[in-house]
Length: 101
Image (cartoon, rainbow, N blue to C red):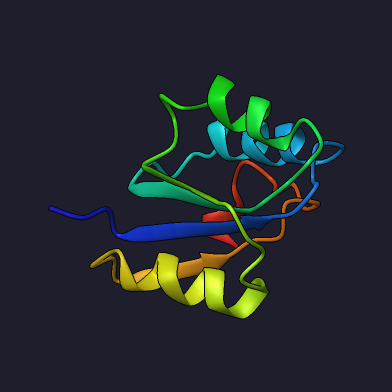
């Protein structure tokens, strides 16, 4: 059974922000979600951060080419049967009670 919510994150050289974003998701009071990350061929430490959070991430796609923001999100969204999708930029962190607002 799929999680009710897919959190879709597309990265490209996002190492300055990604860890804070993922940490904010770990603190959520709502737990029926999965996180999917698509990396668009980053050359910074983004992929190392993704590897550190591998156990928390429901799906990880490491593209060897930058397929673009929209294409990457569309591919992530197509990969799940979740009822809802939160398209979340990696430079965003959300309040722990985000789902209640």
